[in-house]
Image 1 (cartoon, rainbow, N blue to C red):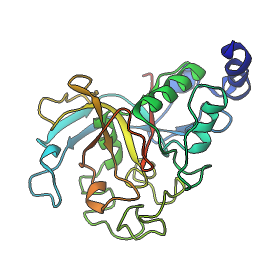
Image 2: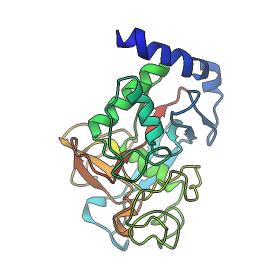
Image 3: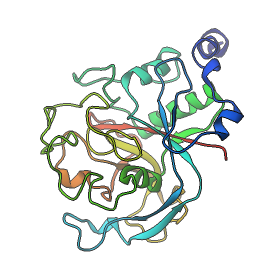
Length: 274
């Protein structure tokens, strides 16, 4: 009943006319963007295939042992990543059709603020819903995809260099007006070379992978680690209330799949057909 009375009319009015055709999808080039809805859904940026060294070297300042061993990862095909973290506007669209739960903003505001207080399971519910709306595979990023996309082709500690500097991100010590106070509206800082915003700071981002203590035995093709302790999953990127060392491209953190915090959100990926 929900499908025929609510979700299907929503899809017809807001999604169907904007879904990429097979021809337009095959024509996509790296750094092009697309959005498969009229409004209130993620704008996606096409990320090129490539290779990168994942993790941190033993001499990187602030390094933790779980960031190694370093390894060469090869991303063999294009994929798309949301330009911004999923916002409250985008989340509330899913809530409006009864497929996502209402979540609190902890007094930080909604609209173009990143959605917070969402669990890993909540994030999976969102990507499943939008996949059903579009007929395309939306999902969380893998941990390797996240680091590759966050680095944007760089090898430095942050995509802008080896020092945190000022006003590059939102954290406790990033030099922004939101530091250690609240989330910033998405897009508040300059993007990386791939055209992605807020990969570091603002909110932690859930990714697909189950937690492992380090990179030993991890796949080299960019795929997710879906075995091991899957009651805990990886979060990446740091947040508005942590120190700069936790925003480093190589830093890894974890949460239980039911964690719901005011510094925890997500962004989405989409498989792109060759």
